Amino acid sequence: MAQHIPRKRFGQHFLTDQALIDAIIDLIAPDEGETLVEIGPGLGAMTLPLLARLPQSSRPLTVIELDRDLAARMRARGDVTVIESDVLKVDFRALSQTKGAKLRVVGNLPYNISTPILFHLLEAVDVVVDQHFMLQKEVVDRMAAGPGGKEYGRLSVMLQWRYEIESVLDVPPEAFDPPPRVDSAIVRMRPLTTPPALDPALLGELVASAFSQRRKLLRHSLGRWLTERGYTGHFDLQRRAEEVPVAEFVALALEMKKPA
Image (cartoon, rainbow, N blue to C red; front, side, top):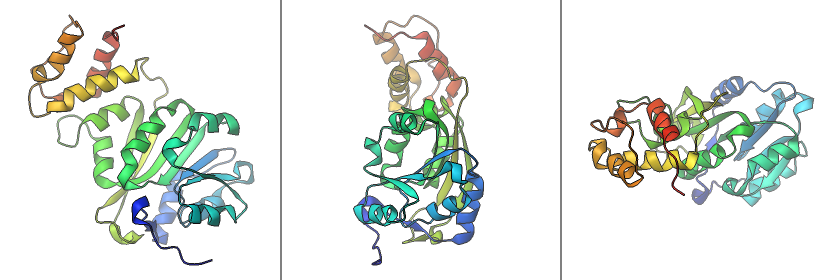
């Protein structure tokens, strides 16, 4: 088959370092009876080693690929199920129902749309066992950050209220063809077993308001938002958003009721 030229508009950077690929597959550790879904298999750098480690009971491996040429390559294999689509249009809850199992989701995500993909998957978090993604290291640092630093922000809170997040492996640019201009990392995301029963949209509004003026004290941003919603409880607004732990944002969202 003809050589595939990476397409810039799809953010294609293909992993080529075999030792790193092996290390990533070890981290994923596919096992008997699991249902794996790979986002953006590309030329199969992770797909083929995953298949080699995947027990027969867990086949076929499902892959989601937008590039029609790469989708055709994968379809020709016969041991994978190909969903040729933009991942943001894939209904992961329906996919889980079709498979009759919760999903383990893996992939080298396109860096230009990695955050929208993470939020799209958040909507189906209850049908996910875990997620292992290759992402820009800066994004992984923000996802896993604790309060008090510049990396901690809206992304940290909106993912950590629902996942346990861990950066598990750094990946240098030279591990790819073509090399990206940034460092990369593998992140492991495990849904919390007993998440708080809150309204995610309300938490999203609250957190977006809090971080809208992150250099100012919360009374200038979140304080106004709370006043507009008639909040009469006590929340320390003499802090910056980056000083507030995830648990406090969650507790505030649980206190609030969305206006009718």
